[in-house]
Amino acid sequence: MTTLDSVEKLALELPESQRAELALHMLHSLPPLFLDEDEGISEAVKRDLEMETNPGLSMTLEQMDQQISARRTR
Image 1 (cartoon, rainbow, N blue to C red):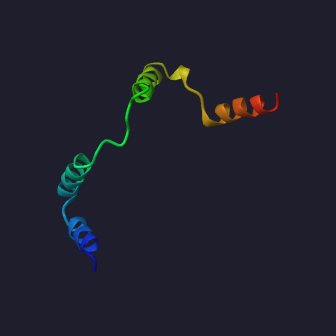
Image 2 (tube, rainbow, N blue to C red):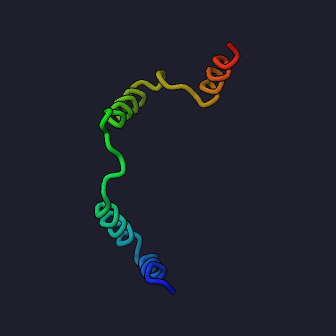
């Protein structure tokens, strides 16, 4: 059994709260995955808040598919 397998087996035996704490520590030990150089993440967070505030701004997946299909047929 590899070291990773052993560590994973032990970690999965921990209570949920301790697994969550361990996961948080592990994630914080990694370098950031997303760079917001173009402010895309900030824009996504802003739009998410706008849709929560005014759900009428959003569309269903079916509506989005219809719009995409309509653009392709032009």
